[in-house]
Image (tube, rainbow, N blue to C red; front, side, top):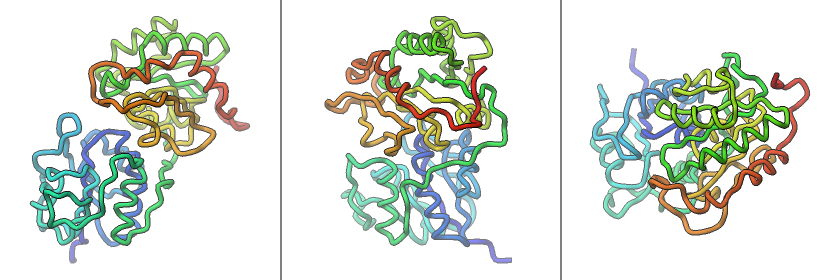
Length: 324
């Protein structure tokens, strides 16, 4: 039997990056129904890739920060199509070009003139950016095609408000004492509040839980498995966080959310226009999203701003989970 042609997509980044790339991945799957779609991405994101319904196989690939992997462990014949959804520079272009794909789709860059792609616009929204790339090659793509199906795993805290204080860099972390003030106020108003955190954020999560008076079974630290985290978010009353992966997961599940922005404005990474999602931020110059200190624009946000945004979120639909 002749093997299926293969389409390789490079997006070796984090959870939020993968979720914002879902519309592009689905567009590629529709445009190449006979191809095996292989996603080069961190191994930990395999369950997320599977949940999109667009990816056949994940090729483990990662690098520190947002760098381009040094190599891809590709085997067999060259990919029939390779797509650079990772960035706009020669490192990602050359990494894919080294595999000698039959066709390479990428944004143009002066240092790789052999790639005749569209121009890169730095201020473009991340979801729109990758759909426009595909559209320039004649592939129809809808930036709104980003919802994930509800996981089969039951939620460990249906109807709770999920507070997530962490982020990949300090520049995107709102102070923990402010998150704790919000959590305590919501508890006083009768809401169950739970806190989540990544594998290296146990101290941050524990500090918030102690300040807000949360019980042990309201703490989900240590980087919960994706199916458990996805179920928690899907059945939550709301998600409160900075601009990080769980905010995009809330959008993917249609869960109401309040997202705090700082170094990068919502116009580039924020949720779609929808009453279920509130993006909080203050205008000002962009900062380094990977910086070592909270961004001044985010520090201008107060607990009362977050609580006010929460009260403006739509009420749960009839029959939706409620906290106990």
